[in-house]
Length: 84
Image (tube, rainbow, N blue to C red; front, side, top):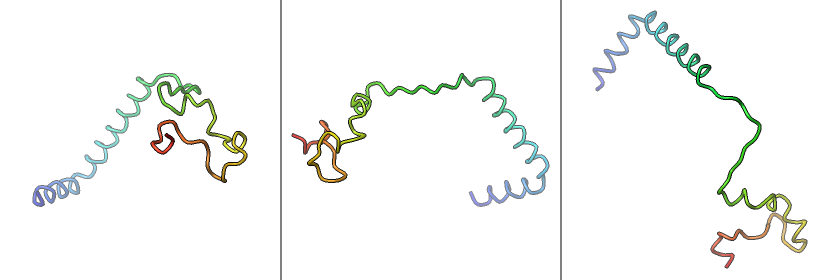
């Protein structure tokens, strides 16, 4: 394996113009593909089927709902085994 990598590195050094042009060609193909196959950008994001998406923002302000809760603690998650 080391001999193969040595020969590859030696070839890349001896043919550095070909290597640079090859990488430029690969980069051009990637950029052209990204431009050709990209969709429209959207500001909307949905996370259907995820528990936190069904909370409706209740995790944002736990102190407002539980004034006696210690700082940094909100209501336990229904999936938390300690919540039972």
